[in-house]
Amino acid sequence: MHQVIEKIRGGLVVSCQAYPGEPLRHPETMAQMAMAAVEGGAVGIRCQGLADIAAIKGQVKVPVIGIWKEGDEGVYITPTLRHARCCAAAGADIVAIDATGRPRPDGLSYADTVHALHDEGVITMADCGSFADAERAVEAGTDIISTTLSGYTGERLKTDGPDFELLERMVKAFPDMPVLCEGRIHTPDQLHRVMECGAWAAVVGTAITHPTTITRWFAAKL
Image 1: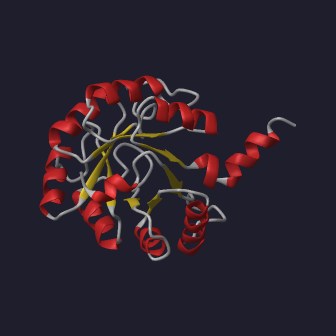
Image 2 (image 1 turned 45 degrees about the vertical axis):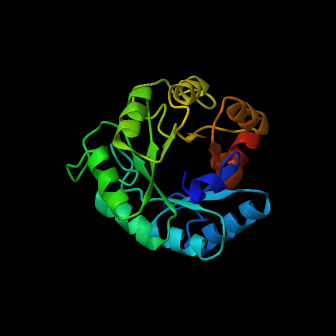
C-alpha cells in the first residue's frame, strides 16, 4: 500500500470547493479553507481545479486529492487522461477520476486512463456511482474506490445521507481495497457510522466548507 494512502487511513478528508460565481471561488481562499480544515484534524484535502490544487498543495502537508471538473453533466470529474495528468502536474498526490461506464470525451476507458497514469507513477481514485463501477475500477487496477457519484448517475437513488448500502457492499466485496465514502455526509454521527461500516476514510465537503448551503439548512428551520 502506498504511504500516501496509508496517511489518510481511518481519517477525515475535507473537500474544499467553491462553485463558479460564489464568493469563496478563489485559490487563495480555498487554500485558507484547507489550512483551517487541517488545523481541525483533516488528514487529507480534496479540491478542484489546477489553481486550487497548486495553492492548497503549497500550504498543507497532508495528502491532496485533486480533480478537474469540466462542465456539470455526463463525465465531468477529471473526464480525460489530459485532465488527470494536469492534476498530477499541479501537485495532486492522488487524482480522482469519474469511473463510471459512461463514454469519456477522449474515447479512452477508465482502465486505459488508469494504466497510462500508473505508468507515470500517479495514484488513482475511482469516483463510482454504482457497484458495477467499483467492480470495473478494481479490475482496472485503480488504487482507491469511492462512493462519490452514488445518486448522481441514474443507477442508484439519491439517499438523504451517505449511501451506506453501497459502501457496505464495496467494503465486503473488496476487503483489500481502500474504500472511501463520499457524498452527503452531513453530521458527525453519519461520519461515525460510515467508519463503522469499514470505510478506509471519509470525505466531507458541503457540511464543513460550503457556508451558503449550511446557512440555508439553518434558515430553513426559522
